[in-house]
Length: 631
Ligand SMILES: Nc1nc2c(ncn2[C@@H]2O[C@H](COP(=O)(O)OP(=O)(O)OP(=O)(O)O)[C@@H](O)[C@H]2O)c(=O)[nH]1
Ligand SMILES: [Mg+2]
Image (cartoon, rainbow, N blue to C red; front, side, top):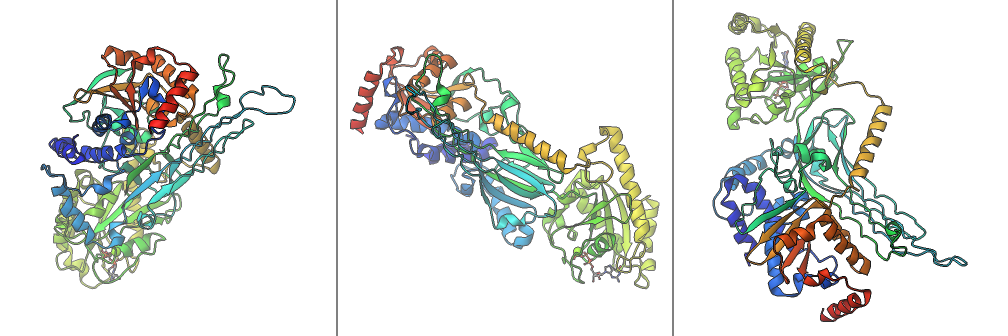
C-alpha cells in the first residue's frame, strides 16, 4: 500500500496545486483511521465491510487516501497545523512561507494579531432519531412514535461594533456549537443545538484556511474540493469513471463555498459559517402505507469542523498616512473622538486607530490612523507596509508631512513611492497633503520647496498644526468635498449604493426590526439547507489496482454516516436508495464484480452479487450473527 508520505511526495510534484493537495493527503490519511461508525456488520448481505481482510483494508485505505470523502470538502484547513511538514519533492511552498513566518514571529504579538487570525469552528452534531412505539392501555398497535433528533447548532459570524482588531482571537480560537438533542418517544422531537456566534470587527474577511487571498471557485470544478480550485486530483491510478447528474449547481452551496470568502462590511451583519448537522429522523417519520411499523431511525449528522483564516481590512472613509512622528495620531485626535497614543518618538502607533468625526454636523466621517511608513517599508523596514491594506477600503487619503523634518519634500516622495509599491489602487486614490507642525517657527519657510512642488503639480495642500488645532476645519472641508466627489463618481459608475456605502459612510440605515427579520430569514434558510438531499448527485471513481470503487456525493456520504445499521429495515432502505438513485446501475454499467470494494464516505463495503436477491429478515439475522461471531 502506498504510504501517506509517498502519496504526499507524489502530489508535491504538481506544484500548481501544492498547498491544497498537501493538506488533502494529510486529511486523507487521517480519514482512514477514523473509527468505523457501525462496526463490521450489517451490509454483509450484498455489501460487506471490507475491513475484515487486510487486502480489502488496504484497498479501501488507498482509495480513501486518493479521494478522501466528507472531510475533504468540509475540512480544508483541518490539518493545516501540519503545514510545516516537509515531504520532500521540491516545490516552492515551504521555501516561500518559512522566512515570512519567522519574520512575523519577531514582530510584537499586538501587531501580529491585529489584523490576521486563525480559528477553528465546529458546528453541532444533529440529535439521533428514536425508535419507539406507542404503548398504552386500551390502544392496541399504537404505531410508531419515535421523534426526530434536533439539528446541531450552526456557526455564525457577526460584525460587531466597537471591535477594531482580531487580537481577541489570541485567547480563544475554538468555537463549537452545541449538539442537537435526541428525539424521544411520544413523537417528541429533540431540541435544536444552540448556535454559536463569532463576533468579528466590521471589515473582516473570512476564508477557509489554506485557500489564501484571491481564492475563487473555478467554474466546472469539483465542488467537493472546497471550491474546486484544482479541478483534478493529480493521481494517475484513480480515475473518474462516471458522473451522474452532477450539475455543480450552486443552489446547495453556501456563500463561502460559492465565493471562497465571506466579507462583513456593515455593523450587525451576520453570515452563516457552518451548517449544523441534520437531526436524525425517528421511526415515526418512516411510517408509510407499505410500512406501518418502521423499525429504523437515523443517527444525527456529524457537525463540520474547519479552520478559517480571518483578515481584517478596516472600514474607514479616510486614511491618514505619513512618516513616523509626523503627527498622524495627533491629527486623528483633533479631528475625531478617538484618543490614540501620542508621543515624541517614531512608531508610537503600532496598529491602526479608528476615529469618527462628527464635526460636520450633517454626517460623520471615519478616519483611520495608520502606523508610520519609512522609505523601504516594502522591504520590511520599520513596520513594513502591512498596515497599508487598511487604507485599501478608504476613499480618500490624507498624507501628513512633518514640517519640522530635515527633508519634507523627500518625505513626501518616499511615502508616495511606498504607496505606489503597495498597490496601484492605493496610489490612484485621491489624496490631500497636510503639512503639519506649522506652529513651530520657521516651518512654513522651510517647507517652501515642497509647497511649490505640490502647487505646480496641482496637488491639494493644507498647512496645519494638529497639536494647536490650526487649519483643521479647512482640511476637514476639503476632505468632505473630495469624499462627496468620490461618492458621486461611484454613483454614476455603479448606481446609488456603491459597495454598500451611502453618504454617511455607514451604509443604509437599518433598524433593529429589519435586522431581526433578516436574521430570522437567514436562520430559516440555514435550517432548510440542512434538510436538502439529492441522491442522484454523485461521482464514481475507480482504482484498478485494488478494484476499489469510490462514490462521492454529499447525500450518499451523509446518508451512510447517519444510517443506524443495527436495523434490518435500514439495510433494506439503503438497498432501495442505491437502486433508485442510479448508483446500482452505474456500478453495473462500469463492470463491478463480485468481491470488489465500494467506498462511500468513511464506510467500505464489499460488493456481493446476492444483492439481486432480496433477503428475508431471517437470512439477514443469520448472517449478522455469523459476522458478529467472526468479530
Ligand atoms: N509642535 C507640534 N508638535 C506636534 C504637532 N503634531 C504632533 N506633534 C508632536 O509630534 C509628536 C508625534 O506625534 P504623533 O501624533 O504621535 O505622531 P505620529 O505620526 O502618530 O507618530 P507614529 O505613531 O509614531 O507614526 C508628538 O510629540 C506630538 O506632540 C504639531 O502640530 N505641532
Ligand atoms: Mg501615531
